[in-house]
Image 1 (spheres, rainbow, N blue to C red):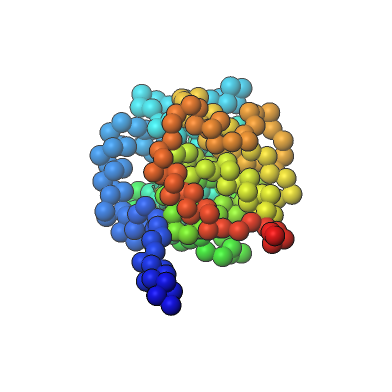
Image 2 (cartoon, rainbow, N blue to C red):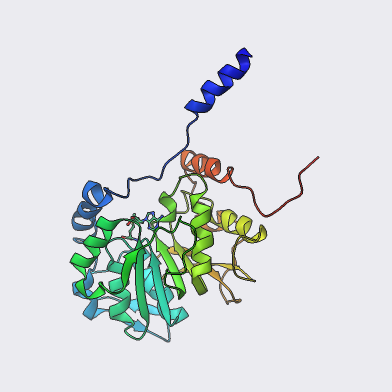
Length: 274
Ligand SMILES: C[S@@+](CC[C@H](N)C(=O)[O-])C[C@H]1O[C@@H](n2cnc3c(N)ncnc32)[C@H](O)[C@@H]1O
């Protein structure tokens, strides 16, 4: 009896994690400041887009005098090399990557979604010409037929911050369902075991594609990302997160948290043990 009471008290105190940020206040709290003080002084913005070119033969994007952030550079090279007819960014924030893609690949249809209204307001302010291509989208909600499907769907620094129960699994499953051909995850591989998570979702039947091939995609300026493809590609195959981490020791604290999120999931429809 006493033990039950203690259990109930502990249950109420039990700690679950939230996402890394409060997305409703994220732009005012830190995002806008980070773009203007960290990103813009060092890296190319859309005003430098005119100087960008993509070389089909080498698959390399070149910039003008200011470089792109290596992660952002990789996204554009992936688009150029995979040549999708349409591209959608989940968690597009201030919309800069969507705007770069639109400028560099004018024949490719681009769109972006974000769950934060103030992030989208910032995107419209920075890129008024994108207003018809951006929309509110919470990728951790049940799948919506209203969401734009695209040949390539990508995220940049989004899933890494999601730590609310099994939302990261819901997001991954939804992203694959949105994508006709490819999913690119440009995320910090210290924050989740993304390869393991995708494989668990795939093997449990939670991914919409018949075949899910995992590859490491390298940008020409040093960044690496996880590429999911419906068809086989001539790229290094991924079967573990260690391959993405390249020998860099991951943060034990972050991975513990990710593991605790993921442990709340049950995969597929396995027979009960015992
Ligand atoms: C670190 S910011 C990155 C924004 C943008 N991709 C960039 O590189 O500048 C993370 C973004 O993901 C968005 N986000 C977080 N959870 C989301 C969700 N469940 N669905 C869609 N967007 C989400 C946030 O609102 C925020 O704009």
